[in-house]
Each structure stands twice: as structure tokens, then as C-alpha cells.
Figure (cartoon, rainbow, N blue to C red):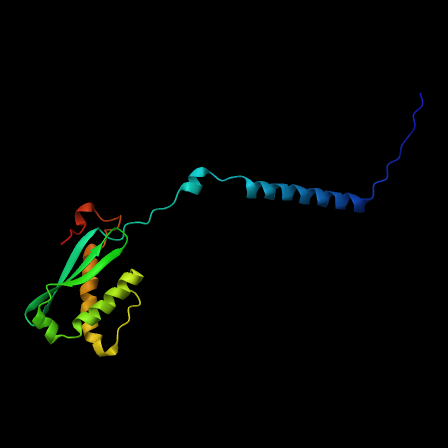
Length: 160
């Protein structure tokens, strides 16, 4: 039997480089798998519906100006303020309070645009008129607010 002995010489530097490249290759393959494997379809298609902010309906708050009632009416759906208007505005009240309608229109436009009562601005010359109207709108929206999930259904407000 003839046996020839072969001697293999391994350099430590080459072994370290080979091990590092193998490790980097494995990490690269794992990264590609994580990036390109599709996620669960339930996670992709589940879009969280916005929670109800308001109870849909028309809500009113009355202001008494010179013994005349003026109603501020706010119409809402579950997530939006749809309309804000003044009803039962007598001509005498409109004449006695000339800034009432322009101030109200300015406030209503800002609220409908922003869908919020935050950052509402008004001119200094109609500050008090705007504050009274804004408080009436806040009151109407307070009536329209949806109950929080922790509240019982019997505590929910009813539309006016």
C-alpha cells in the first residue's frame, strides 16, 4: 500500500476573513428575507377606523340678546362638523348687534375649515361678540360630543 501524505497549510488570517465573509453573507440573506417576505394580510388590510367624535345630529344653544332668543345650530356627523349657523335671528337683534353676523360667519368658516375650536382668531374690534358666539358654539359641540368608551350608554347626550 502506498500512501502519500498530503500536508495542508492553513493561514489563520485567511480563516478569519473567510469566517467574517460567511457571517456577513448569512446576515445579508436574513436581511433580504425579512425585507421581502410579505407580512400577514390581516396587518396590511386592517385600517383603523377613526373613532366617533360626535353623536350625529343637530345641536342648538340659545343666546338671549335684548330679550330675544337667538339659536346657534351646529350640525355634525360622527367625525366632522358639517354646518354652523344662526337661526331665529330677529331683524331688531341684527340691527342692535351689527357685528353679530359678520363675526359669526368668520368664526364658522374657521371652525369648518379646521374642524376644531383650537387656534380660532378674531379681530379686537369684535372680541366680546366673538367670545359669546364661540362659547355658544362650544356649548353646542359639547352636547354633540360622543361618550367615551368608559361611559355607560345611558349617559350619552341626546340631540336637541
